[in-house]
Every structure is written in C-alpha cells, then in structure tokens.
Length: 314
Image 1 (cartoon, helix red, strand yellow):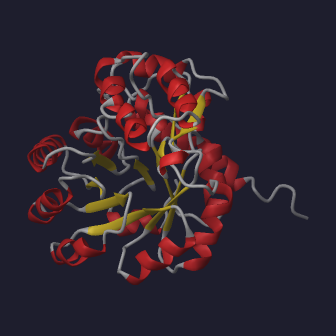
Image 2: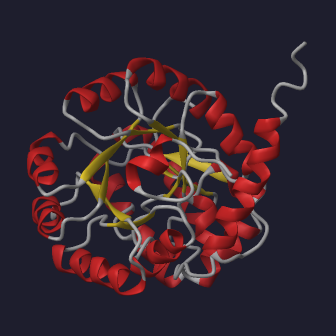
Image 3: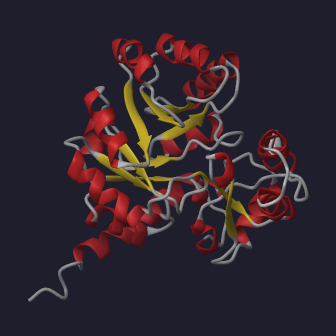
C-alpha cells in the first residue's frame, strides 16, 4: 500500500488526481475516480457556472468521497464559477491557465483546498506565498496546454522551491511513471490521458479509439505562435493548424480556427475538424478499463518498483 502526505491532506486512498480535461471530465467520471480511491476532478473549462454546479451535484449524488473542480482561469465565466465553488464548499480546487490569487481568500474561507497547476519554479513560489495547499507540477509531455519544461526537470526544481506537497503531471500512465515521480520528489501524481479511456468517461468513442491506436509519436504541439502551445493527437485538423502557424494568416484568424475544435473532438468525434488533446503517453495505453481498476493497476505496478529501487545500491 502506498500512502503519502497527499492522502492525509485530502482524505483519499491513493495519491492520484484525475486531470481536469475540458469537455470531458464531468461529474460521472470524477465520481468514479473518487470512488476508486483517487481524487476525481470536474473540468469547468469555459462552461457556465450553472453547468459546474450541476456537475458538482452529480458527483455528490454518486459518492461521498472527496472530489475537486479544475478552474480554467482564462474562462469568460471564471468569476461566476469561482463563486459557485465557494458556495458549494468544493473540497479541492485545482487551477490552470493563470493566477488564482484574486479568488484564493474566498475559496480558503469556504474551506476549499487550492492546488494550482504550475509549469515553472516562479509560479510555484508565487502559489506557495499565496497560501496554496499543494502544487501540481505539470511537464510538457501532458495533453492540452503545455509549458516548455519536461516533467523530469520541472518536478525536482518545484520540489526544491516549495515546502508544499507536490504532485507530478505529464507523461504518467502506469506504475513506472508513479515510481519515477516519487523519485523526483513528488508525493502524488495527476493523470489525464489514461482516464480518457476509462469506462466511465463519456468522451466520444472515436476519441477513445484514437487514444488506443496511438503510437509513440502520435502527438503534436501547436499554438506556439500565439503563446498558448497545446499538445494533441496528429489529425487533419492539427496538421493543417501547424502549417497555418507558418503562413501569412493573421493571428486573429489563426486563433479562430481553433474555436470549438475540442468540443467537436470530445462530443462529436470529428477527426477532420476536432482537436483531440492527449499526452505523449497515449502510445502506452491499450485498453479500456473501469477508473477504479486503472488506479489499482497503476499502484500495484508502482509498489514493487519502489521497493526494488535499492537493488543496484551496494
């Protein structure tokens, strides 16, 4: 059995978070992960406050265990969503794409534990000063919005820069990834792409099929020209977008090409026009499983690896 300070902090059995994948991570998936012993997370994305409240109620109708909500701080609905999370006393709030400072006081007053996603040491130090409960250090191997640093180099530097518990994210799909994260100094992990093929995940079947058939070089990073790089599967859409970045198209038109692309992938399985966000670990995922089974399998793999880590030390 693997137990870390994250388990004690949040009251969860396994030190694993399910990533807040926009248009995908809903109340049903979050509840399944929480019931399985991890921390299930609802993705607020660009959704309305009413949608987020509805998903919170769905989770609470399916489990009594802790869960979280991921807030995308660039969302036009962020202020309304932030207020709902405080009103609902959501146990854990993870944040991305910005600085949650203006919301921290209200969330902490409501008893919420705030755990920001960080992609740099500077942001880790800032979030520590603002009173975060823990940090998620996410490397560029992950799906969705990515930073420049890899998990291998980011995690130890973040661990050195803070006294808070750190979870590693990006490039983790099995027990080897968990063990590696712990060796880097993390005391938990966040996993997204693996949960895309959980049985309880409501993403379009075509999306799941593309994950299961992915190879080691199946992903591409686009959006660097606009300052918001995104990792997704190679599809006609992502390849065309990559070409457009080096064309004479205006930044405004380039940004417009991506509008609604994730929804088309997640809800309609549109290979030609959809953006299928996924991490580089997609090539390691080969079957659909219940969320609880994914969690148990990953930690069952990690435990003997960690126990055997000293086998080469004399």
